[in-house]
Image (cartoon, rainbow, N blue to C red; front, side, top):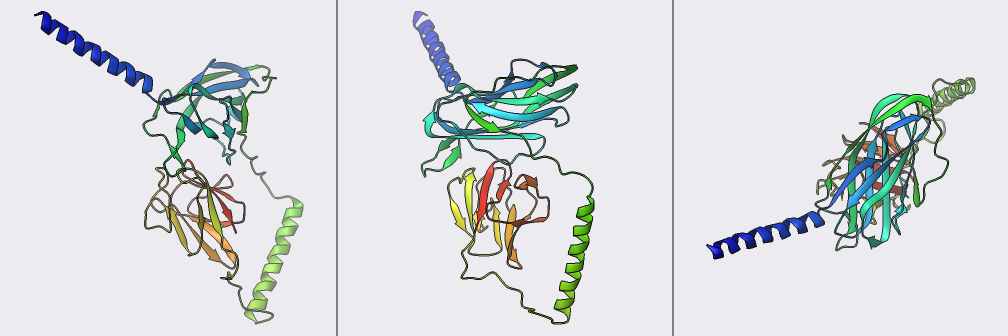
Length: 321
């Protein structure tokens, strides 16, 4: 009887130790806030937190917000060596990314994210996605596997009474999060005149082509000119460059594409890059596609050197030629 009791105690002790080890090595990201009640004009601060037994070399997060209630200002990380990587921002989604050249241990605060309360409202901040990054065996940035997202949502209440914004700036690596200003509605008088001038020039150009006046040859992209490239800045293939030696060039998760991006937020055939009239274009094929922060939905956009393209949540590349 004593030996059986000892055996049961040993099994329970082993089980307890295993659970304790698993609890310590659990890796996750979650969202918190010190306060959920604010006045109009005050600074709303939420924290992106993480726990990881594996040292990391970067992290990303995306927090959705109501642009009618809140305006994003910036994010700040006090983790040593973490550098802010500015990304094109879109209204309604604060997109943050940080990277470090050396591995860092995290167990607590990753970044503080600041918003300005615009008016009285009841609203939520939601952690739509987040990831911890490491360097894989090939030396490229890759998401750390097995990271769970815990608390995703923080409910906020903003009163109509006017408060005072925080005067002291955040400490640490600052990441701007303000989206680009919305385009103004309407066309000014000078814009109408310019539009009329462009229409006249277009008509004259069409007449010249129709009657054979001047050169009728359309210059093609010269094979001897410098080949355009895509430089991956963020995502599983960060650091890699691809030369556009074959056009059209299809980009997506399918290995049959000219450029295969093994990213869970990139669809099988996400976009294609093609050339027409001596110009490069990018066409969205059904995924989430942004050029310089502007969404491209089932349409094409002109590509110029230095343009920043984001596919899905985190795949980011810069076009160059």
